[in-house]
Image (cartoon, rainbow, N blue to C red; front, side, top):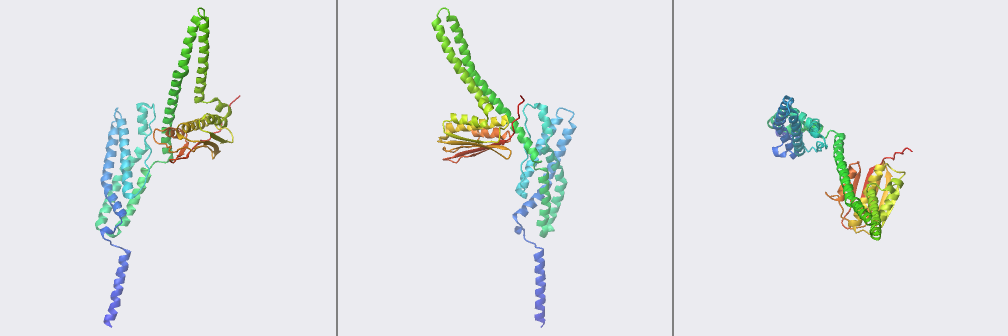
Length: 404
């Protein structure tokens, strides 16, 4: 009887102990998940990292502010913000490695041409990314001391609940990284893109001006200079040898025709008259007629867009058709253009050998860059063996009626 009654009693005690063990596990060290150990490592590193960030921020701010009345103070502050950016980059990397936090890199400090030294200095001093990274460095020290102490004590005293403590503390770290070290917002990134795009537009315009100057100098200008010399010689021979003078005038007449043709071609390269007078449909049909590959053109637009949009679309299609003529080995090609959702879209396809891409330095890369500078998009689908399809789009803007 005694043995029977003591058995269940011992069993009940064992069951209660088992329930307690289930509620509050005390696993050995190797039983913690890898992510928990990463979080613990992050918490223990918070103190040394916080000391480095805090000391750096205090020293460069004190030196920069103290020397602000001298010529080196403001440049020192600007250089310190660059260091702040580097500290922020390190902390984003640490968060990715230990906390599995994926935070986009903020946009680079915009570089605007022709700013001058003081313009660039002012741009650097207004860098929001550098200032937020500096604020992050200040916050890290008190938080690092607290988290280091809690994590270290928990390792020896509160081991069973350490995973929950580590997760709670690192969630605060995650919030700090996302709040202070991520890009400010889409506006900041967009501003940086527009700064870069403005540089692209300036470079493209300068390259176009150099091309026009070269074409004028080597083409029509040289021909007109030779024409003037021929007419001068014909004038000298007019009395002593009228027949020779007549032949020279006739040759000069032929040179005039060639010079006029070169000037027409140059003007077409700047902005074709047919595009100005009749719009994209006829202008693209004229382009297709000059292509060495038969091209079918379909244009479905409600009305003409702004002249600038017409020009961008026209010259993009022009260069794509030139690429088809020179490189594709295609038998046929198509050009389609339409309007949808406030965008002008166009697609150029050919049945050539394929393999086209926008790798650095290619003509397609230049087209993609130019379209990107006006908030456009450019997509190439060209598997080896073909076919090749290029889809591009630019924002639609209605044409402005001209006053009569």
